[in-house]
Length: 179
Image 1 (cartoon, rainbow, N blue to C red):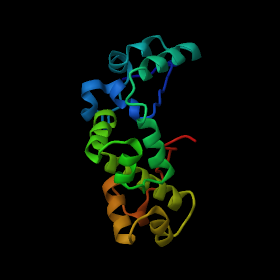
Image 2 (cartoon, rainbow, N blue to C red; image 1 turned 180 degrees about the vertical axis):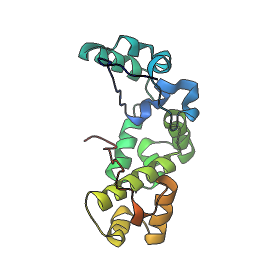
Image 3 (cartoon, rainbow, N blue to C red; image 1 turned 90 degrees about the horizontal axis):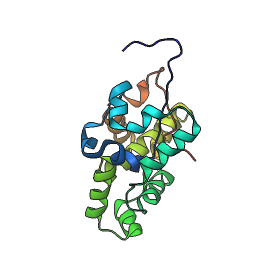
Image 4 (tube, helix red, strand yellow; image 1 turned 60 degrees about the horizontal axis):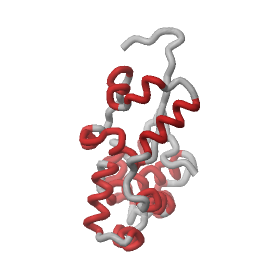
């Protein structure tokens, strides 16, 4: 794909529970996928007309009208507020669901189990504590909710592909969840 002077870029960032609204039955193939141009417009036809704030608002309204159960945003907020450390059973009780149903809702709408999503939030928070907060690894492991540095190292290898002591300098750490 080539880019020309004057090309316009539009980025759309949605809350996690809207993943199924965008990807529909292809949610399980969305991981590590970036769509550009026609491929993005084919998936989300409203993008083709997106040129200003009004059309972005319309696009967001279209994407969010078929959202999950109204409890899902609160559950995601609870995971983020706890730094990913909330117990799955407690989250299910909070929603009035069984843990099995909670997992089904997460898989159907986010493409991940609730446990994996919580672990990602925990990893991201701990990564920020080390990189932005400049905490030593032992303190970051404790504050992040890991049982020890070995537990922290396994999570970093799984989700980041690197050891906590070897965080790539060029790694960008975006805000996962806005306040």
